[in-house]
Image (cartoon, rainbow over the protein chains, first blue to last red):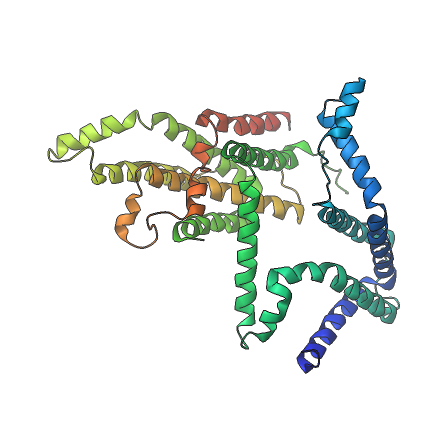
Length: 216
Length: 184
């Protein structure tokens, strides 16, 4: 029901939470992330066809072993696309998520001493980001909870249990589906590669880095 | 997640906490010991079994070499030998690999990864010997119920001893560590 006071209070808490984050981080960082995240999402939606074409052509060209003859090039264009209509939306969202992550990183580097100034502006910019998150990220979470209506109507005190159960079911299905897409031999190769990679990274960070000169 | 997966996953998670507390520079030495123990047990497994069973048969003439008791005995021998090797590394003088680990938060993330890997190797090896000798622990009641769930059956095929054709491949990362150590 739309007129529930609990929903109004929850929305208030949600916006205050994002507002406080904005006030702490500073308005420049928040506006930077908001403007570029929104613009990049629109840009991705607009140019998704062209980006998909470049990735599909480039990817198939590499897959085919960089052909230079006419027949080989024809096969590149005839090969099944890496990004097809069925996974186009996933691609746009993954690309946007990567840009969003990068924007936070770049924003922190660009506006280092922004926090603490104009906290009210930061608060409002934080709320704007809250709305952006609600529209672009939270909407992707609703299917996990069947739209959320069942959760809202669950007996008081059982919501947390329901959320944990649904998250566990969702992750179980996703992980099982992911591993089922590989053969047993591929799974073993993947696992041994992961083990070697962990050992490689750990030993490289122990011995491979040049130690920085210590200040005296 | 069924009971057996939970049981071994809990062991793996405990190793994550240990790794975060000790740091991955020390935990990597445990990884080496674990890999060496897996390799050695893989080499002697099968060769030692007839000798052990013959010894027990000599002491206890009624002992049936094809019984569940024989499986339990072999499982206990290999599991205890493996646990002993891991415990020796923690309680005794750990291998000193030198080097310095990365500062937090990167160092903490690597510690978690190394802990997960050690947890997988230890829990996976214990599970492997349980699976190899038809789950002797099931005699103790709860925990290892048969038949295994589909998830557990899939996990059994990905235990450390089943990753490569033989455990010799597990020596490759040790060689890499030693080479980096010599260079570093």
